[in-house]
Length: 85
Image 1 (cartoon, rainbow, N blue to C red):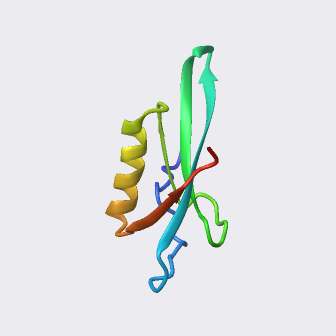
Image 2 (image 1 turned 90 degrees about the vertical axis):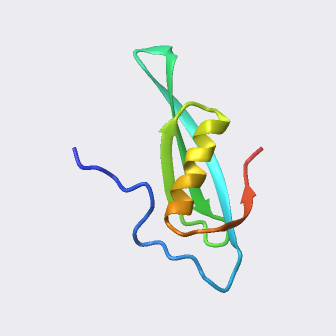
């Protein structure tokens, strides 16, 4: 199985515009519903381009901070976060 990059290599945010990203998550389970697995992903709020970046983990603040760290490692400073909540 190939390793997927956590950041889309073909996405380049507009450096002149503040970076506005939408975060969302979905879950599934392995064998039992108590063994939940969450996929967190980010899309560009301006263009709607999906899967700018993603992480797997629990539905916790720690997983969201890992997602933020992935974006920071790519050199992207997020000006505004949006959610479906």
